Length: 600
Figure 1 (tube, rainbow, N blue to C red):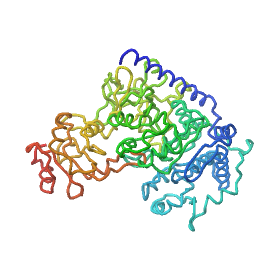
Figure 2: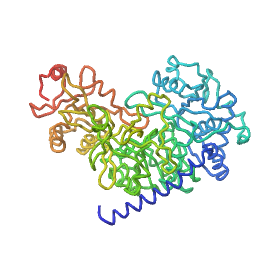
Figure 3: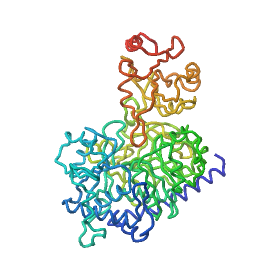
Figure 4: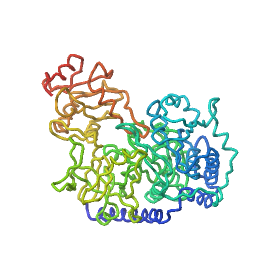
């Protein structure tokens, strides 16, 4: 990085950091100002300005707050007490934001349920928060019925939409006032009271319900408004799930807090993405996971560069996608960030350096206390020295990123609010890390940091595996595979092989036409670009990859199915060292590999 680039980077970070600090520091200093107060002030200030837009309904600021007041009245009418939980399962629409806001005004907590869940997974999410009531959109009732036998409590069920089976909340709320409740009658609330539960994605097990209190909620809304430099002239395009932090909190919150508008689409469509952006005259959009890759994989269209987008932000934009995505759609500013719903480590890439998830310059390290510590992949635990303390990684050394847990208004991201389950909370906290008595949040993510303070995501702990005595980062291997060309999606993971130590690399691949893949050329490419231990031993060709509702790839089922042709219907191949080629796996070959009769 030359001097001019370095100065530009420092200026971008200084401007972004100071703007964010100005917006977020007052939250902790006004502990009685909650989302209830914020929404009512916004409704007063912006009144009939358009706040939320969709094909289904459009709300002004006055509508958004007024609809919330109706749901608040409903919550009080059923006797919902402060801290009690209502589970909400509804597709994307502006009404969604009024529902949880109204319940929060009454002192309740809304559990934002993934609309893709069913059966025991869905029941788990309702049970783990001890929900007193459930609001289900009528189009999801059949899905909800699969969970009813597994519910542990006698929860009250309310339908939003037409049904003969349950009380209709959309009809009953019409009898409640749209006016703000008199201050003298309100349930006392502070920023430390719970507001919503947002669930982790569940890529490595059952989802955990993260506690998002009024402090954390406002921190996300104001923080991302400041980070993106949002103004009242901005329109955010939001096609991410409203049950997720980015789609449901930061995207609408970033513009609502300054009088802008948020366009809410019911679900992501790669084919209609850019036409929507142009039709609604949007200036920003948010992304997560593999969304940008899906857009890159679409054929060229008339709307690709006809937009007014000034900035897009999100996380999970992989380095191999970044530059092609930026250049094809002529995006002036990509603001990648790193954060977790429940975590206290937040990084921002203010200067759009491709591949980096954020930067912490030296002059800001005391405000954002994040460290990368040595990590043992085999034991899946941090490494401690002879005194029992963790060891900070050197520049460009890979380790786990952790954040110091603090409750300091001058360090607004330092708090950790935990989960609904106390046991889940304790597992994420490391103590006596650098000194006796300190506490740090364990992110579960492997990263490296270069000499200039840029952070680079490597892999999720559990995704990285050991093979031939070496650590293999699935994310990096996947990016290398896509460099060969022709792959729409790749998913790399490790699978056990007989009694061998470690896990062998396997790649699930999606192509438009697998018959066009030149396997000898692909094998030569792998040999040229990856060390022996990191090259996939097995290939699996799929029509599509399973993903979560937030576009994160699922791996657990793939690992479980492995490379057994009697279990997997997809075409399977083995990187045969003896013949120097990829060969199709059949049952006899599978048995030989597992028995150790074939060299790996």
